[in-house]
Amino acid sequence: MPKYTALEIADHFGMEALTGEGGYFLQTYKSDERIPEGLLLGRKGEKPIGTAILFLMTTRAFSRMHRLASDEVFHFYMGDKVEMLALYPNGESQVVSFGNDLLAGELVQFTVPRGTWFGLRVLPNGERDWALLGTTMAPGYDDLDFEGGDFEELKTLLKNKEHLPLLELLSGPANYDLE
Image (cartoon, rainbow, N blue to C red; front, side):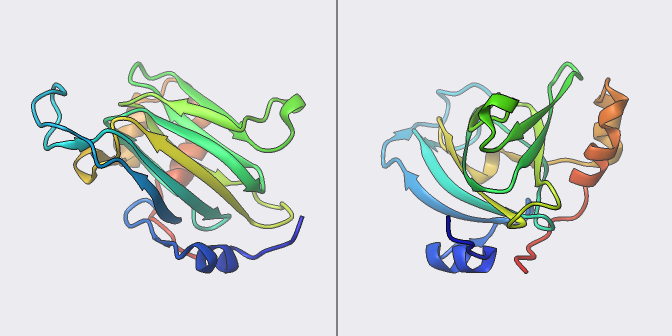
């Protein structure tokens, strides 16, 4: 497989910085069908029925802790291994590994349930220092449904304190470094 750089991939797709979260993205699909406001309990505004993005991270440009009002399905496409921390509403947590080594338990797809706090990072010391993923959402993504996480608040919810260092790392400021 060719050894592209993160900058080459971002330029190829015309990706933009994912403000507030970190990393780079390109929206590849947004349904023109809409869910009217009021049909989804507790949700503001009308929503697209579905959306899809490409998402690029590096070892420095990670996805900081956040939660969404819709389920988000992650798809691993290429690059180095990725680690996700999911912090569920009941305080339980899970570390999910994405990558190509399926027999070692690495996943190529995983669904984050709505209301779950989560963040992702590319594991260091890989061959490329980046990873390309995709996500799909239904109902589709809407900025009104995004909530950024605060370490001090999230650490009080976390039952498994072994995940505290990863939570702290993924709660840091957003980074957009592709080099």
